[in-house]
Length: 348
Image (cartoon, rainbow, N blue to C red):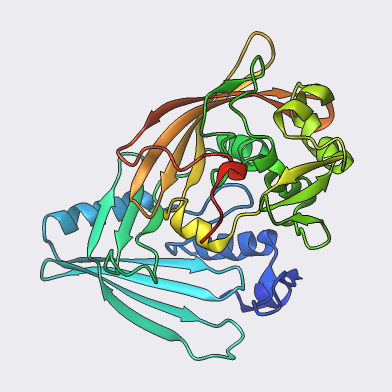
């Protein structure tokens, strides 16, 4: 049904040469629209919003039948970024929920891959998120749960998510994991924001290969001009105050930045996924914007691992400044590890 659309689609070379060529989102949208117009149960994806099942109400009815132990089944189709076809059939047989799956190559250069798994655990949350697991929880070679959204995401809120929240991060950075305001930046670690804002500005990961490294401190030296030009526009803070908070070295005219190592991610930090979602927003009398963010963890099957409130100041020409952050709630796991990296012990 979509072979011609694939043939004329705009294709992009992946950053990693080992990965497949990917389609532009506009081309994937056209394919999904064609399948949806034919009445097929397709996961509808987007450039900003996460994919969701447009036939979500029907799938929720299926899950209710599963709860009652009835014989029932539902199909689900997804278009992968490569253009390949993903297919899943959920079926309740003798009280057991199973999922049959297949991936078929659009180019025909590989045989379809078929699998069947028992669904070991599943849950449909009040927010319309369907989590299911097909692998034992102790087996860390695989994702713990898979998420299928059954409700259409709010495009306006997800645009706020893309524009503001995606500039920061939750791993090895306390921007969103501690209370701070622009009246007092003492709790905020500017150094750990370096690679997040670099990625946000340049659209690629920062590589420290050409920067000097201080082994005794386990950090790289970022030239002051580069560091300040990147960090200062995002905060209402002067250069001298930033130098006090961020450990400026007047002799070398540099700032320290510590790169996260894989063993630190495994042993010092958390071992579960986090995905922020802006759930509400309000414009304040002073022109700032405050957003409530709930952090989903698919690995932990929860819609709200913790929540926080972020305030930003929109600027002319599309820029903005971070004004403050406040933790609102947290679950039994607590907040992720968020101590400034320069205080971490040497990686083992």
